[in-house]
Amino acid sequence: MKRVKRRYLALQLECETLPTEREFIDAVWAAVTKLYGEVGASTTGLSLINFDLNRKIAVIRTSLAALNIVKASVAVITGISGKEAAIHVLAVSGTLKALYSNVK
Image 1 (tube, rainbow, N blue to C red):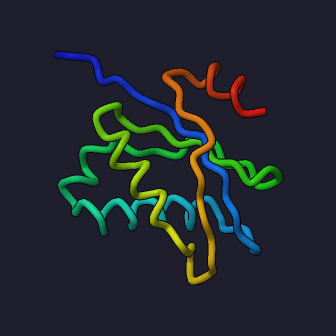
Image 2: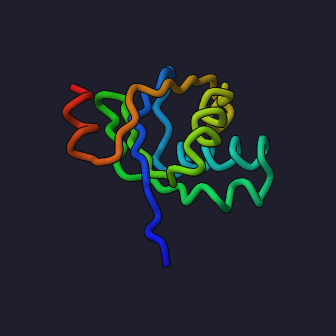
Image 3: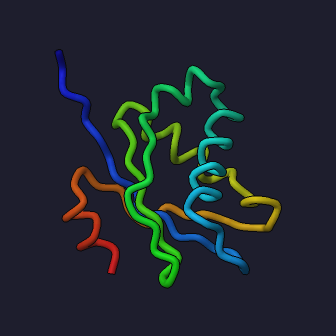
């Protein structure tokens, strides 16, 4: 069996009221499902690694094959739980150590 290559994305949230971790990851899943359907969403292997409310930065993990799917889906998010919000990709890396060194 072949090993799954993963990528970590650092995401910057721009919103007036901060969402909870559950609201954030639900918004990302909803965007992926809306653009690519359930089959596309199942290939992402998406999971939330870190959610820093003070800095408004979230770190998510996805498979390398679905990296472009996740980046496109994050770009179309305009609201989280009924409130206006935008999410920007700050950095992408293969390891958490390299990702955190790029995002200060």
